[in-house]
Length: 128
Image (cartoon, rainbow, N blue to C red; front, side):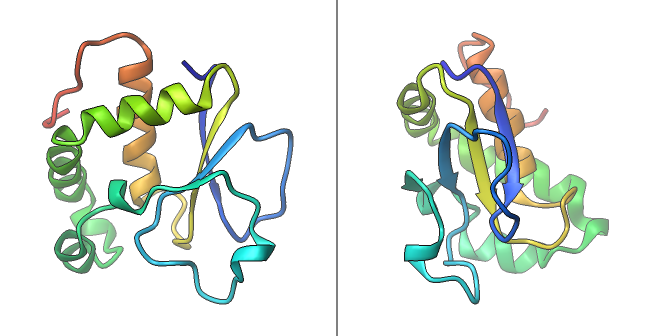
């Protein structure tokens, strides 16, 4: 399992060694070409559903409800989440996202869930 799960906005310059880099947006980030973004995997199936993404619309007042709904969606993808952790191995796992808001985006929730799974809990709670 990875030593650490981090998040980074895909538009930011590379920092310290980032290990296994995974884009977690369903839609490719605007203004970037695929050959200019170093990443190991594009996990668009782990991104929020189009309906949830549109409902949330990056509105901070909907954040807590978004977290609950997104965790519910992720609960059905535990095998894919475990595969992601295994693919990272002992390297850090860096989740890349395109949103401007660094505190209210799907990568924040996904990091929470992956850290819970990496810590050894058999599964995560969709309501946490």
